[in-house]
Image 1 (cartoon, rainbow, N blue to C red):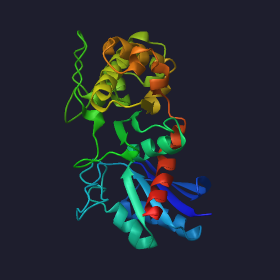
Image 2 (image 1 turned 60 degrees about the vertical axis):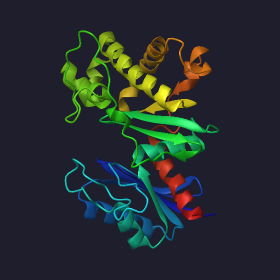
Image 3 (image 1 turned 90 degrees about the horizontal axis):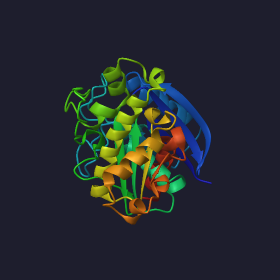
Length: 292
């Protein structure tokens, strides 16, 4: 049985696990402090659990994922203090001496859901997380899509709803997807915590409208077989049903048969791996690294 190490590297915490094939046999959570402290603690945990064949890392970004780049596998410019230009892949590989594969966190999540979760058996999938930020991963023909880098799906342009004069929460683009629909945007717009707004129909009707705008764009551009959508905001009761209704209205019959035939409950779904999608994605990345 092959042993792998998996790292889900988040801006708040790192989850580090040892797996035997798919089964997680040991895991720990490490607070994200400085790069040296956090990466060293993760490597020490892996080493303390015996040899592994390879490591997979699903990491917060932005990352340099351009093949052939001298800084491949490094975090680039990030607002996370001290983490800009951190060589995550190189540091891990040098310390452990085994093959290492890396992708952004949502790239890992879409891979995990494709291999073991809500997208199993499909070839073209979009994974979205709606939380403190908004990110998306695209899987095409069974491979996580990268171009000159990784997709930044949280920053597509949205059209403000008539009467909504909110300027947006994104410091770069204002009223982009993340600026209008992320958790901090909801709290800033309504001046209340999301948990205190659960009974407000107007809040979640507006949120569903903006979510549907973005999913309509991804539907037309990517033509996925399924959109898997998770994150803290999506835990609001009834939000995914509102989103499906809004998406059907915005698509207005102009899309694939999956939309026209009213199969939205199978087209827009929750992740089956839940909060573990990124961690299992890291396991899948480790398997890829081992296979070469």
